[in-house]
Image 1: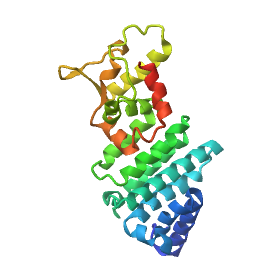
Image 2: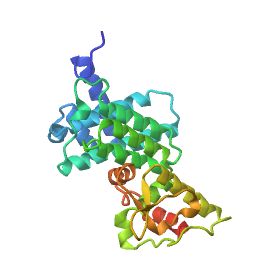
Image 3: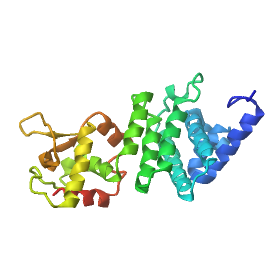
Image 4: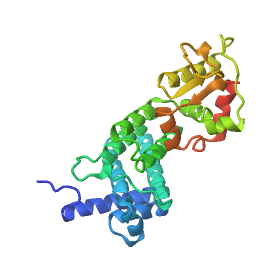
Length: 273
């Protein structure tokens, strides 16, 4: 009968091999965090805070997925996402945050952390918009420290992220209240009625409408309340705001707008002027 992870010398050796493979992948600094998993002195302090459990789940999932028949580009995406997740784990631990305990319960097989990591890493291995890949790392790395988001909703957020385009993530950054308050990106202040024939504008408005239908954004009325958006021609870009729910959580967990280059946000804003 095969021994479970954490039991016996064979399991211990396999975990050690995964750790050193991941350390090679993510570099010496993040590798120090992973080191807590094997009891190596360099990682012992952070491992005590729960980082070893988190990195174990992520790197074990990475190891398993890498055994599949993947193209070089798919392997590169897995590598990039895993590196991003471990870097976020390291940053959170050093800032004093604690790993959520509910994702590492011993009576769960697989653990919730492994389930989320597998879903996210498998998704990014197939992601053709490669600018999304490190952002998925941000999302998963921060979910590991956010017990306010239960496992079912975390799976939902990963699925929603997978279905969004990179430009829609730029839109979430653009419609963030903190960015709106700066006035850095002035937007059209009336509905887009006169955009027929302007395909680039219509295209981005369709993506805005999709975010609305996913309940990630709303269009606020100056007099109070929110507009109902039925077509792209109802959209008033200056009045769009990210709202609490999936849009708010994705914005916070990914770290928008800061996680996206300002030039990408600006390019989207240009179409909405």
